[in-house]
Length: 193
Image 1 (tube, rainbow, N blue to C red):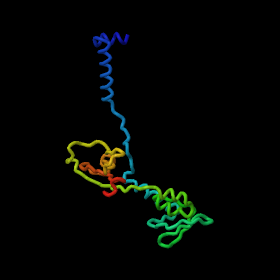
Image 2 (spheres, one colour):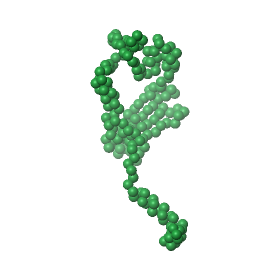
Image 3 (spheres, rainbow, N blue to C red):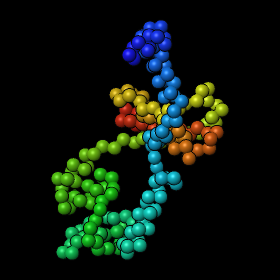
Image 4 (cartoon, one colour):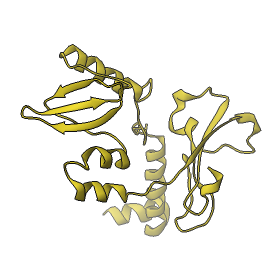
């Protein structure tokens, strides 16, 4: 019965099915589309807000937080640890979290675990330059709707990536500016950094 109706209304079943497809596409395009969440999210004021909130919470809970205090050594004690600071003070701690680069961690744990320290010493770092650029949108020949580019691995280009910050984080730029962040450097191009 459906095929008969299509043939009578459109002159053939095939023409009727094509008409149904066009109608379905038109209805889909006319229907309001659900708002997709952005592919990148961050805190409105940047990730520094997270650190500030963490520090406030720790201090509110009675935790002593020392900023800009270098640790020269971590010594095991009966009750936990003693940290020798670069300003010649010493503090005791129940727990120590080492959130430092591998080479700094290697130095701090070497007296306690020489094998792990040796492994950490072998972690290679690559110097990378981060370059921030701003251009007026009016200087662009055409709009750029993407988030940036990543250079293919194995190429000898000094360019590693270019991120369109103003597209990823619109709240970080004026509407008439395009902000770019360029990452450059590699083992092969270490001299540019």
